[in-house]
Amino acid sequence: MYSDIEIYNSNITNNIARNISSPQGNQPGEGGGIMSHSSNLILSNCIFFNNEAEGGIDSSKGGAISNQGGDIIFNNCLLYNNYAQEGDAIYSTSSNATLNNSIISGIYATQNSSNLNITNSIFWNHNPYGGSGIYISTWNPGSVTISYSCVKNGQSGITPNGGTINWLTGNIEDDPLFIDPENGDFHFFANSPCINAGTPDTTGLNLPEYDLDGNPRIYEDRIDMGCYEWQGTEADDNQLPMTSYQLFNYPNPFNPETTISFSIVGSEDNEQKVSISVFNIRGQKIKTLINKALIPGRYSVIWNSKDENNKPCSSGIYFYKLDVDSKTKATKKMLLLK
Image 1 (tube, helix red, strand yellow):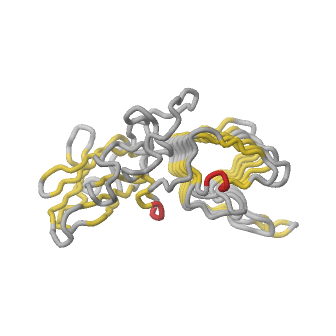
Image 2 (cartoon, rainbow, N blue to C red):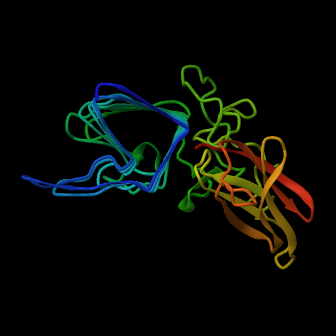
Image 3 (cartoon, rainbow, N blue to C red):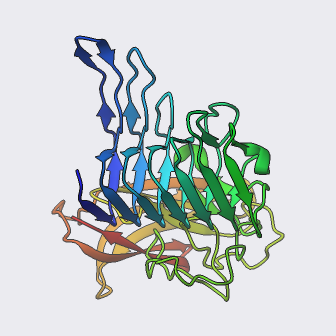
């Protein structure tokens, strides 16, 4: 309370804010991941998923985050698969919130003169409260100012309830073409409309140097919407999925596990020898995760941050490589934080 809270490069997962018994009855849970009161909250390169605020007599609030009375700043954050009756992702009251380059898969509920300033962010795959991805309470409503962002159903995806919507330049409502959002993969296919669609001027956004994959925050000449920067791994922006090899991991940064996903292309019944290996920053192989014949398709494997001798690896940058028929098809970087 009455302090600044700064959280960087963190995964906040599988937490529950339970309802409690009181003389007034069952009081709802609030803030499944974080509950902040009269404090300023600054989050950068953070992932919130599978957090929940349980209901009581009243509605539960803020599956991932509940904030009352302080300001919130999000930079490069991903919030998905969180649940509450009001605000699957975030519930904010008497609080100003700034979102830069974030992906919110859930409801953003605001009330009591809360003002939202949103840039380069994506609101998609939410469980609608009042039919919207961004919801303003009828009680002393605030405002939403949004630019260079992707909102499902566009401006109609915001329920104002008497509040003010400032729908500025660069907003879109096209499908962002996430690779596999149902399973937590919010990377883009190469023909995503969110690539190179962020604001041309990033001054004042306080962006981290790297995206959630540990890649440079700006690739090519313009920033992408959301928390992942597309790295040009597919040559043709008009191609359909599964026309080139793909390799990525999530979450990233991670502790202690991350899922490495990859795709193999070719004729349907043509087996290819596939290997996924992990290397340290000195280029030394520390773990082989897959080494077998596979037919074309999408696959994933979990790395538990242990080496071939089942010993835990230390914090730091690691590389993982996809080889197909003894030829390297892709190499990516990941960050283990302990």
